[in-house]
Length: 416
Image 1 (cartoon, rainbow, N blue to C red):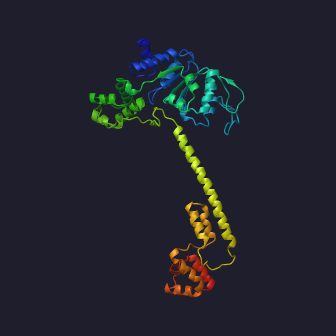
Image 2: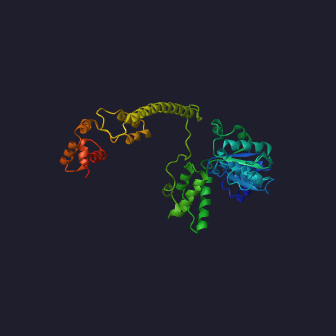
Image 3: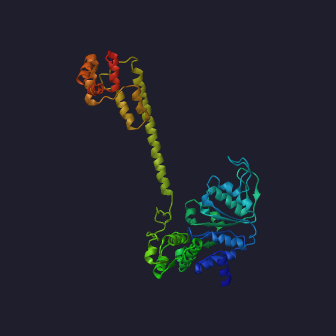
């Protein structure tokens, strides 16, 4: 491509930069534009991938037709098929009318599928069919529809790794990747970083009627050596911050260091390497989940058998319980043991004791509480007398609950 043609493209789309990698990207985009081949643009987040599809469309025979840019990662999985391929009336709740979808509306035009790596597998299968045959079926429909759409896709995902992990179809990758375009990250564009800073600073000055900030040599060196994990988007944000917040219009290295994060590492999600190959696999995670589920199933079965046995014991105790109010037993009740076992496994059946027994008898006070059944009214009276009529203290002294004490007082006619 001639230098004059390249400069015209940059001015038309407000593209700033002279690095060889950027010029190569624009050259490839203009060469592939007259064709109908699918294009896959790969690059980190924030490098400006969205400009290239527009360049391709505007320099293609489809430039007078419609152009749609779709962010596949922002559409919910449950509705993305309807958004792309349309739906028929009544196909799902809320489908009050027929919808042609993007593939229907953009017929003869261009679709830019940004973040194509986020598409669900089922949608990937539908997309592959459209690319191969130009045919699709709307959601809930039975009629095959035809479309003639040019596809330009972009992603910041490592597609080959996604294929190995089963998250992306290999056949779709090769269908989209007819013409690959690799967008360079900002850290590899050299002096373009300074040119972009000047552009963003000038835009801020014109928009908000302020003096433009400029960089001294020390500040330029910091920008050139920073790793820029957020690429052009991050550079623009930092330039805007400096333009608004810095009282100085000449930015030194000291001033600039206040706006650039100290952690130079990328903010993208880290890749976990489980094996020595360097590729992440979910095999180990699946094995761990299977093991956990197997152990959980065994624990549930054991708990079910134990609960059945405990319920049988509880039924036996309830079947032998007299219908009238009897004194407390003179031997430890199996119900106390039952309650202890139930509380160990945190079962809701542990509350059943409240409907059968009035209180749990502490071991050190059990003998005194049992003797109450023999001494009866006389012992109650003495306990109340020693505690000056305080029923709560009397109950504590006798080792019984307040509720049981009140019931005994009523039984012996001492509740007056």
